[in-house]
Length: 259
Image (cartoon, rainbow, N blue to C red; front, side, top):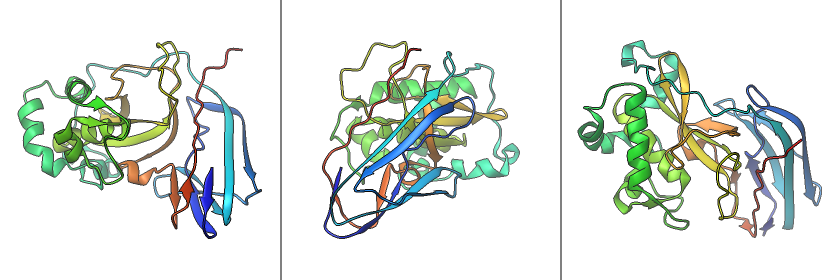
């Protein structure tokens, strides 16, 4: 729910991809007052929705039912790293610094911590293990200006910070890594007592494909539903407003529905 002082152009990224291995059975937008919503694809192919928040109070709701595999993400201990000259052209951008991921500033630490770890999947997992141990999850411990360097120093963050730090270490080692934003219901895991929220994790290019890694939870999970991918959180913001409306409340539900 938002309160805007003036009409405010807004971009939302909350609608998941209807693409394998996830399929959407049904989805629906609703708003009060009724808003005109127009979809488009951004630079990274993510599905976005444009609207204008009117002056005053407005609320939006998006709901969908998604079919997901009854299996955790793939893993392959033998998946290799590729030298930069062998990486696909479109993957190279995910080895470079970005707004929140700073491999150039964390390079020395990355090589000293992980340089001797066997290359490939074991090294990416070692990075996740370290970030999972090093950072303590704490709401309010970071803000919109906090980079991977900041949270590495403070030792605190939320899921996006865990992801930014792990991505930075991967990129410092010339391992392509990209930021993923989406829904992560509590399927076959103990329920988290904290209120449900959006989730962030990363994908790492090893061999000839992207592999899912989650430095925040550090375990293979069922039910991940991707909303978008990019270099870091700045590319897949839940809401981008061209103004400063007040966000009064936000509620996220991502729950297993048993047939």
